Length: 370
Image (cartoon, rainbow, N blue to C red; front, side):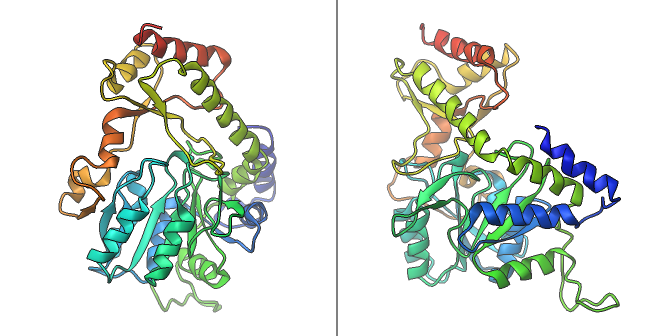
């Protein structure tokens, strides 16, 4: 938190406009639209998960419809597929970004030609091969959704090589402002799209699908998914600092890269040349022959009251999805499972001081005898 957030929160209190909707909601949407540019429209919602659910509803996912999603992601990317009865089929990762593998996606289309939609994620703020994934989906006549919940502020080249904001690929993009994201509203999200009518429809459904009548009339089922005016005020204040947050995350990444450069067992999470990740989380994998294992590092840091996290456990390994199909390119252990087995997320908070970083790095290096 900085100083601008309270300015907008105070305005909401001073005008007694605390309930959902209001000047801050409109302003936050406008701020995001300005940041993205390129004809992007936005609607502010209660969570990124709500945005994904609305995307599934707008695409028309019905009971039994197949939807492709990444295996290596947080559950919120794929859970909404099931809300209206869709069936997730999970796609393996590639090694260059840890995101959905275009080759595995092509393989999935061969097995499930009647798939309803595809959703990918930009893992840990690293842009996926979004232009390529979108092109594959367009070839098969299937809508593509980009879950950029972890990647606001990242940039990547489009099909023509022009650098554009991650989240602006496909029929719609998903943003999250959860408490741990690059900017936060404490809880909240947005659905963004170049399709203004799609965004208007999402906004309508998110407001209980109330028809524009003097009385309360509803012709279809809606949801209570709109963002509150207080929460949106935090978001308006945070937008001012988005680029500086990204820069702070980049410096953390560079600090770790330099600190572990002489430890061959450590590899930081990769990204494609020509892309600009927001470096939301710096992660590492350890070589197969490393005598130090991920939980050794996590336990050593935890002993000093320093929190770390495992890599997301792949969805195809989750008990709740035990019966769902999983598509990978090669036989044997999947790329996503291998990353999960050998990886962990390092402390990446922009409030980390130089002393904090020295402590973290010193503990890790000590495990390798450095």
